[in-house]
Image (cartoon, rainbow over all chains, first blue to last red; front, side, top):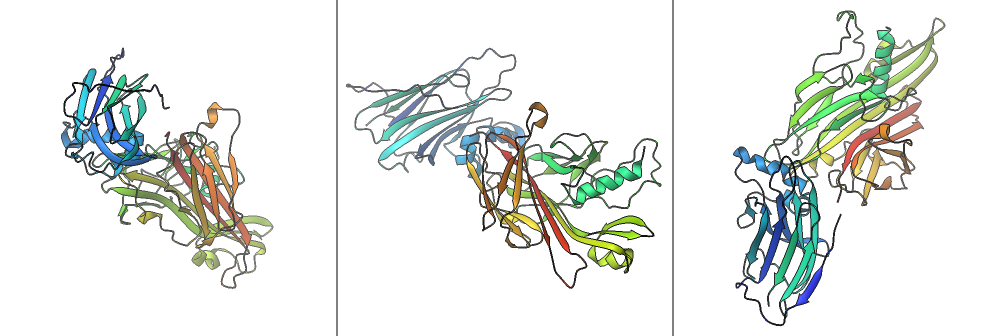
Length: 169
Length: 293
């Protein structure tokens, strides 16, 4: 189920963010559950429902014999679009799971992740799946490259909190 | 208890998944889309009325547990007239793997497979043979077996002799990592499914296209039945009844995520001087998993 809660506003003045060309803030919500495991999270970019590039995959990298990879398929859209064809771990994409809170990831236009982006309209996808928990996927449209700073948000309702995408010109 | 009768029924169910008593043989994998290094699956195999419920007999498989012996039944006296099913487990490169941790219980067999090669695996149970009905000394007899053994077992001058060529195939597909195509190649023997849509890339709300072949040729006007798991918890069977087009193709739009059982049966008269059969009956069944998008 896709939940859209989208707000796009062009900011007149440039924000004091770092030199990141694309910045994503991801809120991992605090959940009142008896058994909590940090969610697996995949961040990637699509165009017309076609996978373009992976930004990040957060999963349990430290388990022996790579057993943490066993649950990657639970992010089933990402697994279908990209994960199943990857040789893991992927440098610059694979990363450890994150704790409850808001996390910021930055990408420069020269990074391996963003280099494939030609000018056009895209969607950021954020998919989260949690052991003994649920799964949620959010989409945020954006255009690339930004003519002016674009800020777009989506609000998750279960496994994800607020996602904020900032694209700087 | 009348074990003889039951064993006969079971053997028949194995040869003809949709026999008169409607017992169906099936395999149910624990997962069909897997990630990780060398993931394991476990598979249930049974013969039952209702799909995916264990309520009649195990599907007995060579190399999986011991032949079923009921309490109070003398193992030596039981009727092993019909051999256990021959399971083939194909790795993505086509080589064969063996079932592990096999067990046969009262209602089901189980076995495990470690997917130690990336790509699509196929589990298949295929049978080809003859089924003969005839009258001998005023009594109706039934024989089933390989065509080569027909003359040995069925009297030449049998009265009311009716012979049917039977062929059945039951398949399960499982993918570790990226789906692959090698094991999807048809053998061109009996009724088979050619997956235009990969069988481990099925999603609710999307249409999948499958083409059926009978002995390698498109099976037009073939009846295909698709039943979703969970029959016990609904009033209607909600089976989808489809018919293949002139190219042997059907399009199936999956109403919801879950396990599905697919069956196709073809039955037609044949004229082959080399075969005593006047009828050819072929069936294909598969257990397919559909994921939520």
